[in-house]
Amino acid sequence: MRISKAVSMKLLKICKDNQMSVNKLAMICCLTQSTVQNLIECNSKNPKLLTIVRICDGFNMSLEEFFNDEIFLNIDRED
Image (cartoon, rainbow, N blue to C red; front, side):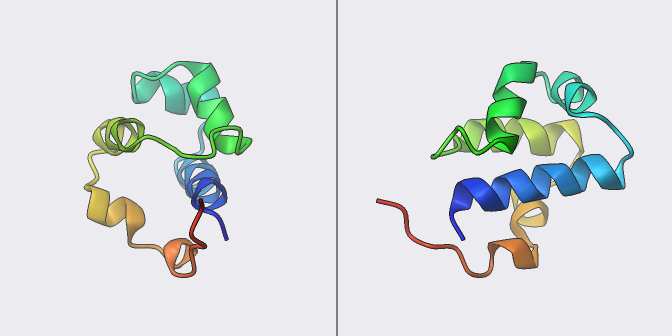
């Protein structure tokens, strides 16, 4: 699985676990709705670490917590 797909799945999981929309996720994380939508739709092939840090900050989670998910176990290398 590509990293962009794994990040998309993780964001959708966060939304589901917190019973929130993509728009609310963007607001909580101080990101634009289009940025979050691009991540979810895998339009961003190489998600920026700073964006993921902002998502983590919005949910008071560490990067370790974000990436500590089986979704990220079999990531393909993207060239």
